[in-house]
Image (tube, rainbow, N blue to C red; front, side):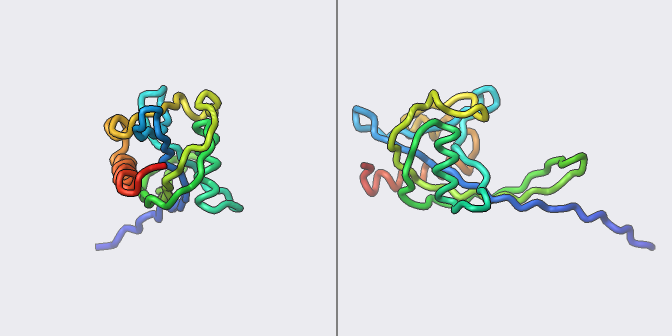
Length: 156
């Protein structure tokens, strides 16, 4: 029996960075910022592609500023999310392997109404509500980790 040759499917490797931005509300509760996509029906963390001249930390700050309208400083690394997906590029189906570096980030200022066109909505949520609303399990796990860190270390 003759073996049939399989067509090798190209793999595209992607690297992005984003953040869990937090602040204290006037009543002392921790709030985090989420972006709404797909008509504002899907809540997620801000993130985007790392440019050739950027570190993941710089990308996280830039993407947060672009997608949310706020400035934030990196406090610490939270973790990486890694996943695979399929996408058609110029009519050719390609396998994508993506790693997203996430950072815990402290809010410094800005205005959520100044977010860019890639995002349909931006809102601050109390931490527990953000955990309940966020769409993706891997990002929910990052919010839970951020909550644990902030509670243990006392957010400032």
